[in-house]
View 1 (cartoon, rainbow, N blue to C red):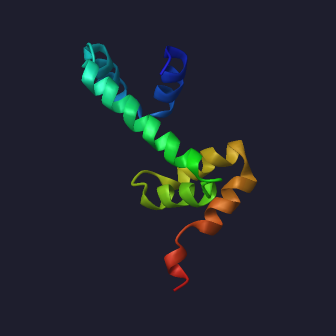
View 2: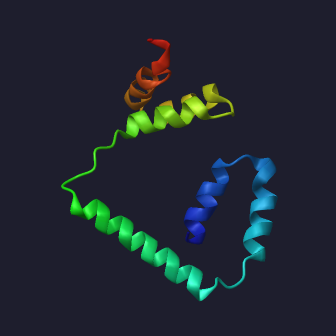
View 3: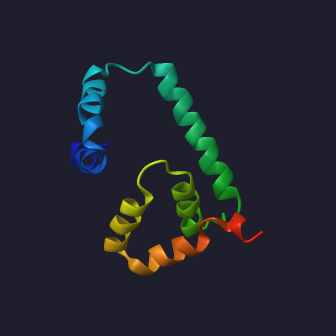
Length: 103
């Protein structure tokens, strides 16, 4: 990620992890050419597979709800932060959380 994006992401991560993340980034060196080639080929195959179909159905709200259901942190604070962005989206996420409770 570009430095601007990286710093924005870092800002939202727990402060206790900031030094560890920056340290690990500082330790990064060269990436093996074969690893980069393999990664490029994998991404190309994924793009081809997705492009071959008309569309891929995806519910971002359901995906977000599933992630939050599995989130081990403070869900309440996370939901409050999300409400600052869009309360309607948060309501939709909440409606999709814990579907297994219906059974």
